[in-house]
Amino acid sequence: MKMLAAVLGCLACSAGATELVFTPVNPSFGGSPLNGSWLLGSAQAQNDYKDPSLPSYGSRSSSQSSLDRFNERLQMTILDRLASSVSSNIIDTSGNFHPGEIDTGAFHIVVQDIGNGMVRVTTTDKSTGATSVFEVSNRL
Image (cartoon, rainbow, N blue to C red):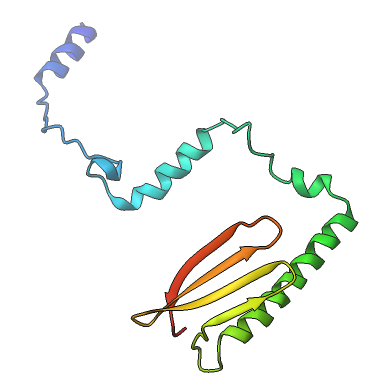
């Protein structure tokens, strides 16, 4: 009897329902742009693929001796000073480039005025012949 009363009580109660509303999460499909970083973080956390062509993180420094790391830093410091010296020869104190050529032991640098306030800087590695070319405004 109690069971019948419970069933009848449940059937007698009114039930309310509303329309189902879909709210997208992914910003690519209309969701909030604030979810983008969270979705990217979740995807990267789930990604266990490791590129076999890349060395593992930290393997380069762990395979080098202290002497090798010191020599590498020393070389970078010397190259930085060389670049500063070269740049002081082609850029005046007001930030303008001076067209001309500069030779270092390993590089040949040509600064050309190409008009419209632009200069072209061509750097050539003397040992390999490889060149790098970029164009910038004449005024830094």
